Length: 147
Image 1 (cartoon, helix red, strand yellow):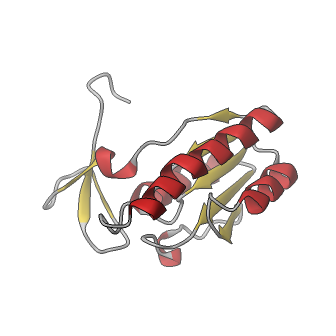
Image 2 (image 1 turned 30 degrees about the vertical axis):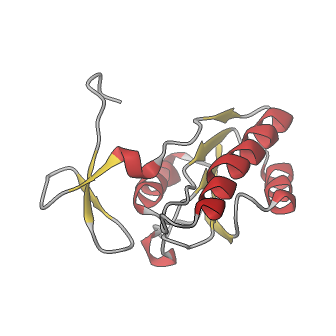
């Protein structure tokens, strides 16, 4: 399976990469490192990191054309500066549209955007946590049905 993961250097993305790497032929991560860190990405032979933005249409098209992913997990999100509505809207809306259109073009499955910050709750020492690039611990949110 060939996987494209946007926002792969963040808390959720790095944990998703750790899960996918052993069961995937190739995992390509797009991240602009606005909130994520390269060091948080697991060192696995099948993982390739592309520094860039989901708003960069030529970059997105190039990656989709060369990778032809079977699965896309769109986790890129902008939320760092609550006063920067333009960047948030550009990344979260326009970037999502570019990813969705590219998925449609190559015929891959996409999970959509998991809205990272809504899936996490800051915690102190919970047993099911991940450490984000900013050093905080976050409890992974679980749906009552187990997903």
